[in-house]
Length: 330
Image (cartoon, rainbow, N blue to C red; front, side):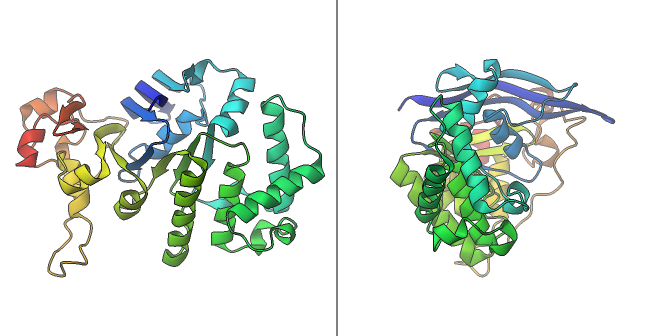
């Protein structure tokens, strides 16, 4: 499979009132066409910032310090002009965000918003803009594709008239308007109850398979990642600490942080098993720890972990950023 997304040495820092926050530190990640990749980690580890960087949706105010590079389909994302970015955001990369009420305008109908997006994609791809009636028909077809009932009438309704699950399906339909190659789903079920979560995740899986999309799924839920993704990338404090096939990584994690995440998940098959939280908390990225950023919370940390940042290296069929990965396995 050819590489669709290539991230190399990507760093990102923001200047604020309290100093410079180093939110991403040397990210190396390659995603092949057709892959399903899950990104996991605690809140604040940089998952969403990384995902938004792929489509250059991160606001770059004065004082923002990016480094490294991101290439999509062989093109440098940071060298794209506004026209190139318009094509990238839709035909290349589509985002499903976690809070549909934030990303749907409450004062416009669903149909009005979808028609505007469809016609904007036409313009970005250099095609003649469809008439509003034709764009409305296309919007109805997309709502039908995400299994929303009576799409013709739904187009005339407003976001507050829909349930949370229906709004999330509308966002999924809007993400598909530009026929994207990479679908980035950022915590797409956070605001939904468990039953609706399962329906939405099943829908995403079916759409990815039917349309042959590449998927990047961000979630705190390891079960969701394991069910939908064949590959898992574990992030901690702005760094990638482990990257490998889902079945291999879940069966035998090699980074102490990954082991801690799995140990913190209750095991319903073993009632006597007690979930163990990871001690401590994510470091302040204004002053990140030297060396391995996980060492203040790691029971295996030694002097080398404090002095030297571990590189991502091959260990037992996956990439691990840990000086003591072999000992962690034992």
